[in-house]
Length: 323
Length: 145
Ligand code: SF4
Ligand code: SF4
Ligand code: SF4
Image 1 (spheres, each protein chain N blue to C red):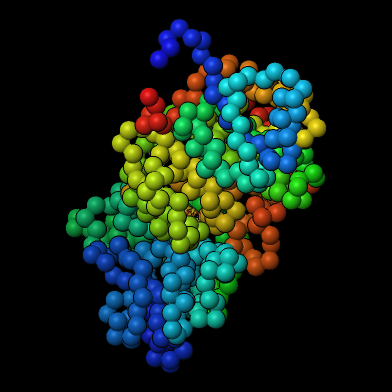
Image 2: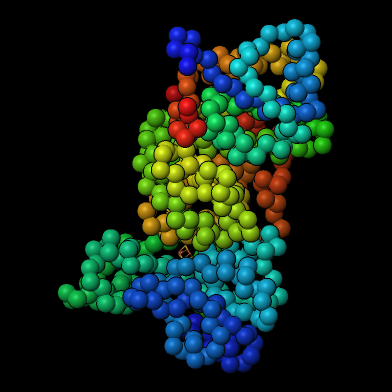
């Protein structure tokens, strides 16, 4: 893990890049935030790569890669999918970026450690299992149990695009990420409606899910339009909640790499990945397997068609509870 | 407010200018009947239908929304309806996933020559939505009187 920080220093010192995009210490050891470092001193003082570097940095490149000079960025496998997707959409200037891929064995955050049973945490040692230092003594927990949601269903350890690699290149791994979607599909419409009401009514429209999402990067967003009636949380009813989540998920359809950031940042723990994965699952089933950001030349399914695509009426008969 | 009047659904029909809109015209000139609660909105191509429009229609009081466009292969702009077909399939599937009745949305291909099909489609759709009753799951209380 130290090698990542050393690499950042090395790149700045050699003049290869003028800035580094990485993670910075926060209030607690577990709340790292994305940050841009402009000097070796800054890196020495604040740069951290640890078990808590879960944040996907690729979205920041949209703004950062358009500035003067080259910037280095560190990408975990899942981040590299977003990185490639953004290149495909011509949103970032690749020539201004030095991409360092990092092998990843899964990330945690304060919350995931807490839900694994740790309180009053003061530090953690990574390894096969995690040794968590707390005010009440050390605790050893299985790493598997403390992983972020997105890491528990990690789809690939492959770093799609990079200039340099720290650690080993990995490959796609089996993941049961659609299991929860399938479970919902098997419910009756009434149950599903009730499920989503419980989830979506907690939304406070902080917009964190939109702001963190690498695919949600329009310069003008429909949800900022004050005459739309859906630009903030409506006190009166549920429509705004449904509208926001349906349309947000739709706008990233076939561009969402399933990086898991939206669910990770939601302060209300709304399982937003269940919406994105529904679209991904549908696309896979109706139009053939597709993974956004997995390569440079496949055609995005919504910018493509086949003459013999199924008619929209398939949804009357297919999957789910047809009751 | 009329209290005693029997409830009838409000249907919004988005019709492509080049086919279904003309099809609706034809069914009119042929004096074919379809319910007056179908409100037609003309769009330049079925592909113009932004998913937002559909949700908006429900928000403003629609009980059912139907999109009518040229038959696949006959699009005035060659391929617009093929893209629309994928989008609507995914959108409808998402609505259904959220527990919103799947029968409230529909896509039908109606050419300019199919006046009879237009009327029949509308009659059938109105019947389906009437059976479902009022749209409650995608309504906006702020838009109600
Ligand atoms: S989703 Fe996979 S690649 Fe991404 S942080 Fe988690 S384990 Fe690492
Ligand atoms: S992050 Fe969560 S609470 Fe905030 S707008 Fe998104 S879904 Fe709503
Ligand atoms: S919708 Fe969520 S999972 Fe998909 S790209 Fe955006 S943040 Fe990542």
